[in-house]
Length: 89
Length: 134
Figure (cartoon, rainbow over the protein chains, first blue to last red):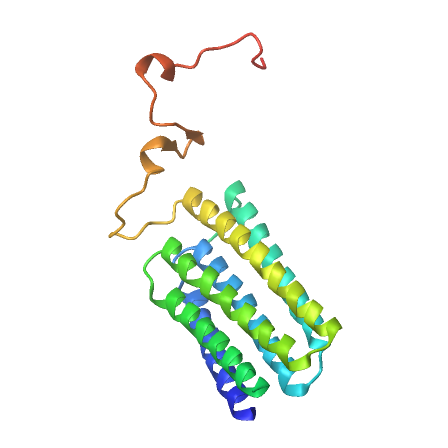
């Protein structure tokens, strides 16, 4: 089981790195927002796996909060984009 | 048996997340990238939360895991729709191989006016009514 958890953590860290490359490179602001939303999803997965690894179920509360923050950040960025705020892609 | 199910769920979830990240890195424009990330990442979170539910097996934890699953299922499409809409309005470029963009001929980005595509010259002219705000 420890091996499986280690492999999955490596896979998700790799996914975080790839998403980060898109955050840095992304040609426009919406691309970066999509990448940040993917970030939040991957971190929720990492927290879930960590909860299994350490056998502490309280980490799920953190996962709920991270998912909520990711959603609210996406909504806020979309509002900002549609209202045409100042930006520098 | 439970260990096997757990390992399978965790590994598939992690693989789907890696798939989403590869999609966001490799695909050519905003909408195709969103098509990769929203579905695959949501499925990854759902599978991992199922593994958490199987691992703990207590009512409180299973309820929280299912709360996360329901939350992700409800918010992922909403967030994707909102970002895609904002991205289109902001004017992010579509991929050069895009076959069809049905919004383009009917939508005026300056006035935010959307046509149905069935207007004739007669009914395209704005007819002022008495009830219109001055």
